[in-house]
Length: 338
Image (cartoon, rainbow, N blue to C red):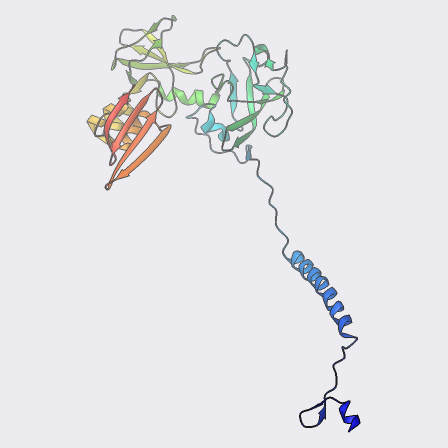
């Protein structure tokens, strides 16, 4: 009995052994805690090895054109933004800009200024100017063209090779846009010779240097194509019914800044009707015109805005020279010339 008093008797007479901790338990727990980070490391390493990122370098926006990938040149445009990618292989003549006595600033370089940091000016007499005598009056072959466009600006670089000496230089056509004429463009202008034109009442220069403004609708005939040194480029020589000859400048396609051809008038009247066709030909906008007619007359607007209310649409188009047009449901309601 005395011995029974020292025992913890429970239930049906079974002895309940006191719980003693397993000495290996803590060791197992420690090993388990160390194993988790190791497994995690190997698992992440495996995932990283299988999921490598393909980092694509950011494009610098520069495109290169040579004779092998140049866009087709239709000779309807001169050396300007819409024709840059078509110029490789073409021949340019540098007739020079007006008032180039101080040379050509930041226009001719010894390396590609679009793709590098070198800004060494070609045959510079000071830091940034190329003397006119070094580049004017010469023919150049366009070897390559680079264009660059981003959300802030546009750039272009022409690699030119001077035909006589073989010298190469890199030219920025945005600096002096009217200083060069493409020979293909000049030859294409001869299609105007013999055509009849009507005056748009804009100032023109006569052969002897006088400035006159022919009356709107005055008839002229294109008799020749010409080019002067240090000028705005190739021009059409127009002769009036009075025998006076004046200069007129093409602005792309079949349009001439100071005149409109009777052929173009007929074409526009056929497309838009006699009333609106003639207005468009004389670059005028009136109520009742469609949006297409407005753009045909004045070109693309520099700003557009649109307001919709009660199933109706009011659109405002703004053009250069303080001109504004409001269209209601696609038809001109107001024309403002400030």
